[in-house]
Amino acid sequence: MRPPVPLSAVRTFEAAARRRSFKDAASELNLTASAVSHAVRKLEQALGVALFERDSHGIALTAAGEALLDHVSRAFEEMNRGFDLVATRAPQLLRLHCAPSFAAQWLTPRLARFMASHPDFEVRLAAGMDYARFITDEFDADIVYGPPRGEGLIVMPLGQETVTPLCTPERARRIREAADLPGQPLIQSDNKLVRWPLWFERNGLRVPPSAGLRFDRSFLAITAAADDLGIALESTLLAERELASGRLVAPLAERASNVEYTGHYLVFPALTRRRTPLCVFARWLAAELRVALPPELPPEMPQPVRAQQPEPAR
Image 1 (cartoon, rainbow, N blue to C red):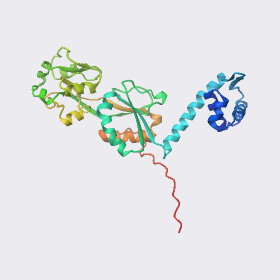
Image 2 (cartoon, rainbow, N blue to C red; image 1 turned 180 degrees about the vertical axis):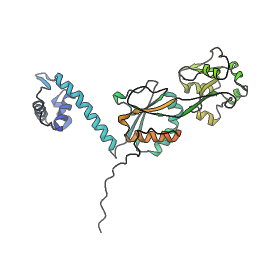
Image 3 (cartoon, rainbow, N blue to C red; image 1 turned 90 degrees about the vertical axis):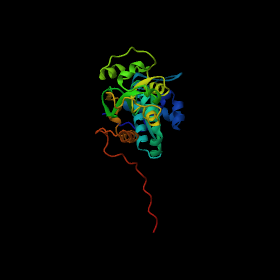
Image 4 (cartoon, rainbow, N blue to C red; image 1 turned 30 degrees about the vertical axis):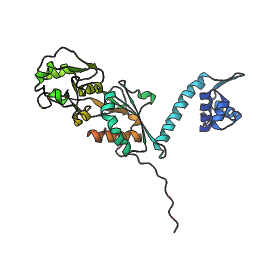
């Protein structure tokens, strides 16, 4: 059996290997360069392998040193995430990736309410069509559009969405039945799972020739429809604000067959399900959308540990 390796020696090795300098590592760790060199020597002796090549020009990692650095770096990163997870004084960081239209139309308008309820949270939000790559631990969770992909993920469906034609009230006055739509400019959303051909088929109509405006994002199609550039076939969830303000209406909501489907999902790695910011956000999201929480989430939120106050003298 190899002798136990002090954590301080591992930390010294990591700093020296990362900076490729005993002197710079010493400055970072508030040690002398001699102390760093001595600690590395003891680590090499304990492991029975050379970790650095030394010459008059400085130091360089050996193949064994490179391999060890890879594992040690990830170990320290994981430790730091653990400290951040349980620390009560540091901000609770939520790193979230989200489908662009859901981020712009639904999530961002509600973030003020979420932040007001959790003032000690810091939220970093990135939007994009690519799925988050959790292998790099860049994000805690992703709100994806379309069926989730990947292994080892916990999936929370964000409820059914109703997809129906949307337009301005002025344009809606000219639309009394589904057959009136082919005479109107139809806004195309190229990346939607539910498009005009499916809607016309559902309502027993021939698909009119494609013409007019085409967009690759739902929030652009919704904005175009609100600006009276045509009729968009979009989710009433994503167009919630425009419908509430009256900028858009659903002229055929009760007079045609709409499409209902689950479009968005919250996904996150099973290994991160106990992170406090992620648990809090998932529960908030489920409450806002009135959907069920995944059974894999902890039944109760972790409570921060508060330092006990000394009892007053009697």
